[in-house]
Amino acid sequence: MTLNGWLQIAVFFALLLLAAKPMGLYMVRVYERKKTWLDPVLGPVERLLYRLTGVDAETEMGWIEYGAAMLVFSCATLLLTYAIERLQHAIPLWNPQHLAAVEPYLAWNTAASFTTNTNWQSYVPEQTMSYLTQMVGLATHNFWSAATGMALAIAFIRGIARRESKKLGNFWVDLTRGTLWVLLPICIVYALALVSQGAIQNLKPYDTVTLVEPQTVTAPGADGKPVTTTVTTQTIAQGPLASQEAIKMLGTNGGGFMNANSSHPFENPTPFSNLLQMLSIFLIPAGLTVTLGRMVGSPKHGWAVFAAMAVLWFAGVATCYWAESQPNPLLHGVDQHVATAGPGQSLSSGGNMEGKEVRFGIANSALFATVTTDASCGAVNGMHDSFMPLGGMVPLANIMMGEIIFGGVGAGMYGMLIFVIVSVFIAGLMVGRTPEYLGKKVQAFDVQMSMLYVLIFPLVILGFAAVAVLIPAGLSSLSNHGPHGFTQILYAYTSAAGNNGSAFAGLNANTHWYNSTLGITMLVGRFLMIVPMLAVAGNLATKKIAPPSLGTFPVDSTLFTVLLVGVILIVGALTFFPALSLGPILEHLLLRSGISFS
Amino acid sequence: MSDIVFLAVSLAFFFVAVLYVYGCQSLKGGREDA
Figure 1 (cartoon, each protein chain N blue to C red):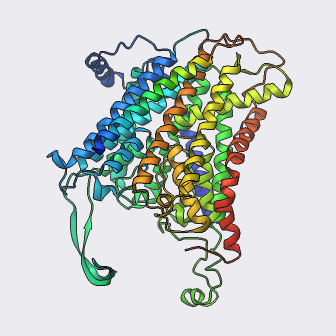
Figure 2: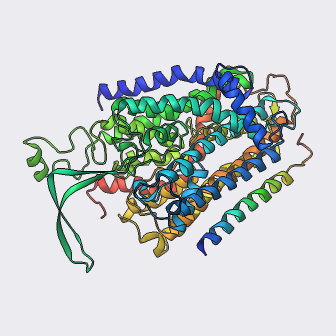
Figure 3: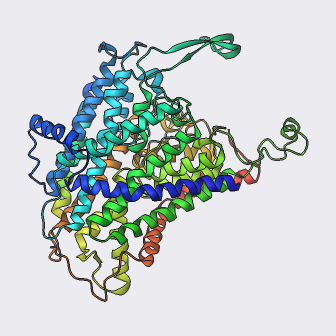
């Protein structure tokens, strides 16, 4: 670890702190339909959309109607994306490479993935998806799924803020305003900023260039025997990349235009673009804490939630940075490596650089990995599979905690609010009083739904992972055995259920087993968790607000932040600790003893 | 054929999700709930 590395992490957090308040206050104005400076441009567009779709913007919905509208919308857009993928070869638009139709299992997995804001990618995008599919099928989903998450978070906040109301807002209005007022304007400016750094934006066919140094490659031929060929040219993929990159990060989607994601120089060209990308992942989730505080009438509560998120974020990045700064014990001190690097030196001096971009280094790779899994983004600028065992455990543990450390756009906020409900319930049990949250009694139904939300998550992850490690279809596509292989499988289901989408890599998930089970995991992890969350919101909205008394647990205090962090750690860590013990923790201990698995 | 299977799986999932909405709602109704 270096001072320079810590300073870069500190600058990142300082900029996030500066951006959170204006972003949060702006979203309050957007969702409360107050005047903004974009109204003259976007107001007519909004009204036209409502007129075309027959939406009555003045009619509000109860939680059941709100949830049903969200489900219908998600189902329709999933099927639309599936159809585009399957028909891309037949649509004479923006397919200069003449890419074939996407295979059904993969197409369904991808449609489920982008509908749920997961953006898990079992495919190589530049070899599989036409420009049309990338733009109309996938990038639009990046907007819709993010705007859906934000709408749901706002609905939950309204449930807390309102008294004796059965309404949570209008899903269609929240979806539209989130897209038009928040996501689109920022993405336009953001995409241009990325272009200024070197990200590409075009509809050209792929370039072919002649290599300066021809490469000799040996690979198995059709008969299985090794065949040596000399490669003299390279294909360089092109495409409308910057525009997709902007919403990929801002919407915490994470699906790369290229297979290498944010480690590709066209997606993430410079250290400055890297900083922008990390900040944009947290921008809306951090802003939503301010939105929460303002809309419920307790700005300090919003900051208390922000503080809990910040503490957990720092714990993650410090652990990951420390772990990656350690040399790999299998390389450290090995004679031939010392000889290669020079007398008295090790190839792993400075830490573990395997799987990392030299232009970002260890600090920014550890920070990126932490941020992208604290949120439900899943973009990567380094390969998590190549991290040291404890370094790789941080992204995994972040997702396992429910991605509530700032979290996904909207999803992080409503996930965190569920933990807030559980925390005040526990606080109420401790003092023997009916728990209250901002003056509202937390009762049996609220706790039942909150626990349903909390329990579905480990159930789907551990259930599918347990089956996958027992059957040949689950084991056949592993690249490593032993605890590392187990971690690859566990990470895949955790990433899918958490709607993160980052891959530990090393696992070939483009198989019928993984495409279908991961698709189901993503749908369960998104929609079957949203429903109980909305039920809590709908129930809270109907309640009276009681004035605070001596027995009221203050939710704007340091004690509340400590309790909230404790509950998150206990629920997240204890639920998954046995699985983590069999994966990265065991691998760490074995690696220290000089044992590794191929 | 696969397309029809995946169409059916998708519709079935969202149908179950809507039923799940009403299942959650049916749990409400204890005397302590407002």
